[in-house]
Length: 250
Ligand SMILES: CC(C)(COP(=O)(O)OP(=O)(O)OC[C@H]1O[C@@H](n2cnc3c(N)ncnc32)[C@H](O)[C@@H]1OP(=O)(O)O)[C@@H](O)C(=O)NCCC(=O)NCCS
Image (cartoon, rainbow, N blue to C red; front, side, top):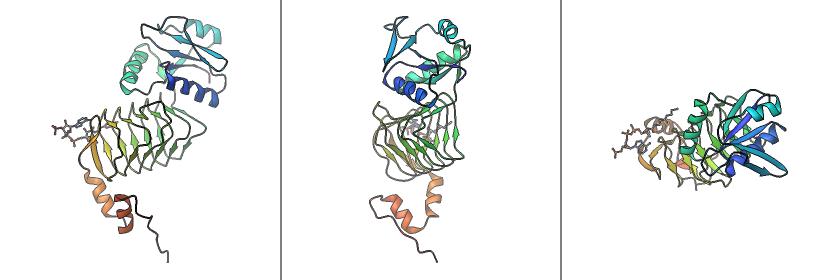
């Protein structure tokens, strides 16, 4: 990469971002940003035998000189969706631009997906075709079904544990949604802005909001969509414990 990467945050998941960056683009110069008062200038994060500086005052002059690079772009290191907003707005106010969303080489992004900027698709994720991922999204080992939308600032998962979140076909996560590890969200569900999904949403086409996310109604479109599905599949979707239906092809 011909720019320095500023990783927002210096917590556990920020270190994961550093590792993913180095696995994909070895030797890319990176720094962590942590402007909390307990963090002092000159602090650094140790990963393996690397000492990576933490920058507190948004002054990149020294690192720019060291690597002979002027441009600094940022990636979200933290998963906390509120923290993300705060640090992203500070980064933008400093005139920094987000880097292209980083995709681990151990993840699969199928064709026709759209990926925003400033986010990270960590290892073990699988994005089926036509998945739309907004800016500043963090996905940890997340499987996403076709035609899904993951809006800006979403995080799957809430903790630093690798995710195993499974968003089925056509799921829409509103801005700033967090999903806990090992969560399943059924097809065509819609999760409201800033909600936290902490339990499986098992019924297709559910609209759920809040912290924790609870059902408020069914969606209209998915009902129509589901009604057009063959009966066996519809029952399967509504009760995933049924055996997968089979089709006779004549
Ligand atoms: C989930 C959503 C579709 C609900 O819309 P709606 O069906 O019109 O629902 P309403 O606005 O009538 O709200 C119904 C109830 O849920 C509550 N509610 C709605 N969204 C909520 C949210 N995100 N968090 C908590 N409560 C919420 C409302 O306060 C209301 O509560 P009440 O009945 O006690 O008054 C909408 O709020 C939303 O979040 N859309 C996603 C938008 C988005 O992120 N788009 C991506 C852009 S990139």
